[in-house]
Amino acid sequence: MKFGTKTVHAGVSPDPTTGAIMTPIYQTSTYVQASPGDHKGYEYSRTHNPTRNALEQSLAALENGKHGICFASGLAATDSLIKLLKPGDEVVSCNDLYGGTYRIFTKVFAPLGIKFRFVDMADASSVEKYITPNTRMIWVETPTNPLMNVIDIQAVSEISKVHNCLFVVDNTFASPYLQNPLNLGADVVLHSLTKYINGHSDVVMGAVILNDDELDQQIRFLQNSCGGVPGPQDSFLTLRGIKTLHLRMQRHAENGAKIAHFLNDHPAIERVYWPGLESHPNHEVAKKQMRDFGGMISFTLKDDRMETAIKVLSSTHLFSLAESLGGVESLINHPASMTHGSIPREERLKIGLKDTLIRLSVGIEDVEDLIEDLVKAIEG
Ligand SMILES: *Cc1c(COP(=O)(O)O)cnc(C)c1O
Image 1 (cartoon, rainbow, N blue to C red):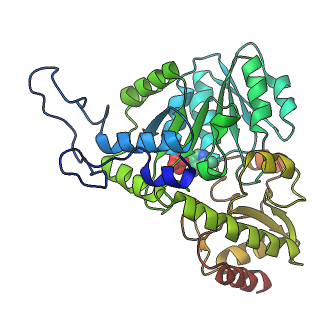
Image 2 (tube, rainbow, N blue to C red):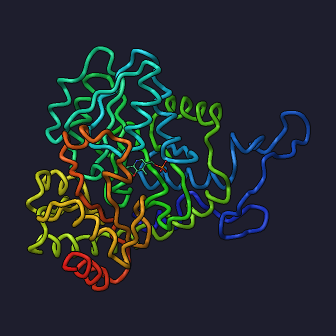
Image 3 (cartoon, rainbow, N blue to C red):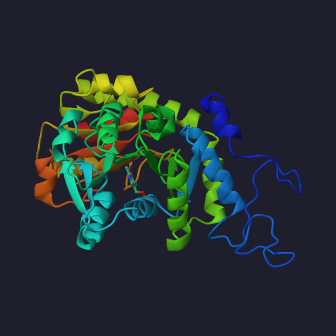
């Protein structure tokens, strides 16, 4: 089945009791049993819920995986994955990360004895140097947030296999429309469904998708034992969002390309960070592993003063100044003070994240209007 057919049909089937074509919102915490232990596969909604199950199956299909497991947020999914480890274990992570991921690694799990090494993975072979006998997991986000670096998933997966590590790819920025890490050798794909997959900025949710049956059981055990599960209403909304994922992503990518080229040609712009540009340092890897380049773009202005960046950030009208990304509406963001404020300034500067960097999440509006909005903000 092709991608656009899966978004509409995978995981869902008419409701067995009424024939309702849309998966009902099973707004229930418990399920009646005929006699103790004699039930229809559902006992309690932390463990199983039919609306959530349909979503989990849909997500597994979109990532070409066998199992999908949903969580109350992307970070709840991250939390469960790191709980697979024990004190003394080590994680090699890319160094340009979603701020909340960096925070849970360094502020929650490092004090519990798990060691994180943050590595520039632009050259995948550099990962090898940081692997020790205690390394259990390799963590990659690609494209990275907010510098839009692209990491070679297949090359890292080969290193991961040699050293028997669990290889996790946070695929939030690309979405399964643009790339499928399991097909490139990843063991686990993580998503903040909050972003492109739900796509309407009205739900916070996360998921992991994987193939291994034993690992599925371990993570389901954590999902049920720690309890960070999404509710049926949000599961329904995400299922509904998924039905147009392919159409939205196509438009995000088309608009993204036009805006990236517009910025790249604009005399006031210093640098554009977008993997579709031929000048992008990892453009060849992006072309190899992604089907298109998406609508996430960062840029800096030649006028490097903070007040100039702040003026641009505050004067767009269609691009709303807000955290998050991947919704139908365009957003503009200041990583240094917003999404990446939890990363210390010296760490940000070390990886090249300037205080004046501006990040766009290009929506699905008419691109002429979006460009006009940016022209006015940049030219004043
Ligand atoms: C938003 C985000 C997360 C965290 O997801 P939440 O749903 O906000 O908890 C993780 N990774 C990336 C790349 C994100 O953009």
